[in-house]
Length: 92
Image (tube, rainbow, N blue to C red; front, side, top):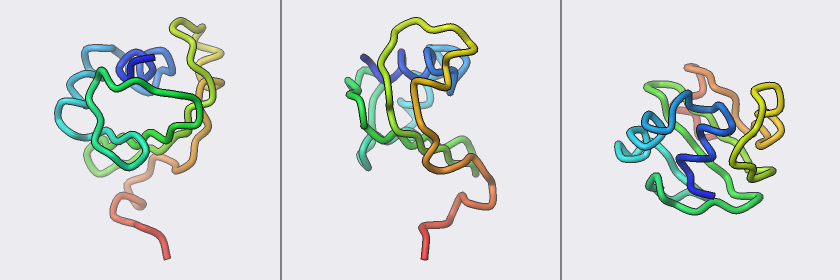
């Protein structure tokens, strides 16, 4: 599944066009590498999204092109919460 479709289906980003913009701006990484909207995802890939000073890191658990809003959270596991305090933190 394409990265932009996953971001939309998982509700991590509201619209696919916005997902593409975020990718084009270099604010998304897959497995530690900058990713474009057309990057093909696989189960267990790690996706990092930067929104301003916030970071969101998730692991891909499932690849469904369409899903209900109530089931969107089943597509990924949160690895790093979205928090402004964690933005520059690389761990200790």
